[in-house]
Length: 114
Length: 115
Image (cartoon, rainbow over all chains, first blue to last red; front, side):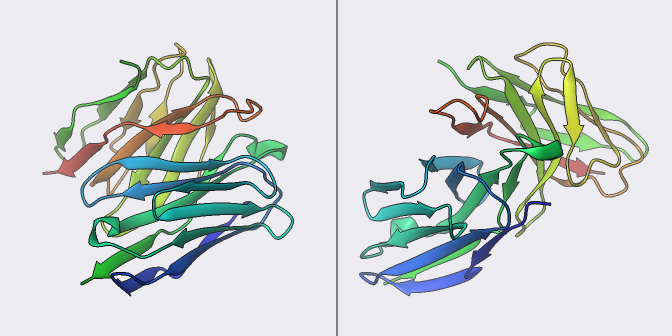
């Protein structure tokens, strides 16, 4: 069974600081997504990582994927208040009886303070 | 505009009633998913479908049912057997994971409350 674990689950940051959210998963996959969710809202797609070594950047966020280590990171550079939200990673089962199943991590609640 | 439409946005259910949540997409996506989110929690998979006329149970399928008679539609029925249905329900769709440009998009959600 595919398990996806994020850490930390809660992250309180000062504006201007850097930090990294980690996403570990338990079975082979080369399809990983990062999403943002604001309170009471749906999920907004941030990044799609589709191969080992993939790196994508958008503004102050950068995501990477290491399929050998089964690890993805979401790095935040010089945090600003607008980045406060919950961030989820999700991994797709690439084989077996659960082919196509999309499993989410627990989410990381990010709060950026002045 | 292409996208995923969930309706209704808010739904109230009486004890013992079945209710159906609608999810329609015009993205020509093969795969569709239903998730449940409880306050302050992550997303738990209820059912998913990779192709028309086929679907699989997710991690919390008990008390729910789905159908996939058309590519663009994946309705979710919350039955009276689901004892604690109050939650935020999210529908998603994606291309097949074999697609090199695969991406999964979400609808705006349906907030179901038992009254």
